[in-house]
Image 1 (cartoon, rainbow, N blue to C red):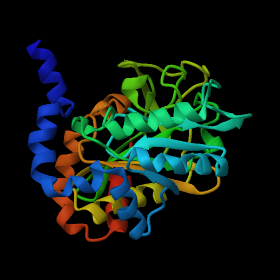
Image 2: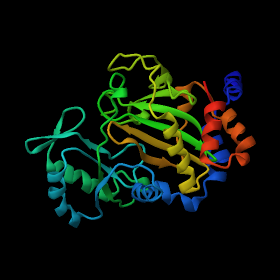
Image 3: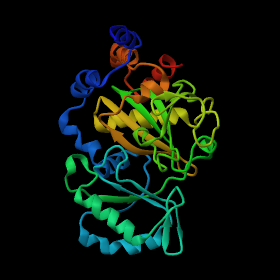
Image 4: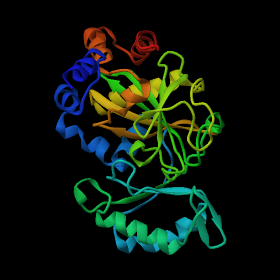
Length: 313
């Protein structure tokens, strides 16, 4: 067992306690957490900074406001319902189309308008919120995922998680929905994580259910070697997440829409560590290198140049 821990240390693997004590607590001041823990606040913050985000269709703050829901459902064929203060993908309902008076989910199952209303009531009650506190429900544009992922994603919308440390993107992972994840991109719900070469934006290795694999479990197509378009622009959007929040250790989730390009979905002050498994590389050596040079990197362009050169696979 001791030898195993020594091996992990030599590989630079960062554990949960090390992440919290060494990076989250020192570099993410507590008063800044509301900027990313509330998705409505995050959306307004990033929009005001000129970053690209999915359009917000509506916000529900109380049961009384649900009388506006039929009009909203009439205007939109596809949308996403999510809790403002949810975590881990819990409470997200994705609607991809209509069939008569019903609404279609990514797995082709149908739900009624009453079911959507009931789901929003559950969100308002705090069923999915951090700490179980009463919450708000938001309804926003349903991203139409880029055809570049057509052969390696099962329904839903793949997203790209980029860890940013002191403004420098240090590691990235493509998260692919599977049949088991119900169209969601959260690994703990059954999605697949794929490593990304920071220089080229090309997918490399992958992990599913904590085991390495080379093909998608549903499409059976190879995961590696897929080039993510506009890679430098994605790194720039992620680096700007640090500029607008002031959080020194940050996870930025970005999706590629087939017509609107990169859109920021969420910012996370406590990003998970599975990204290391997907890349088969530890974070610590990269974080140490940023500590050594970040004061000389004054602009987003300089930080991106450094990331692409220093952290190539």
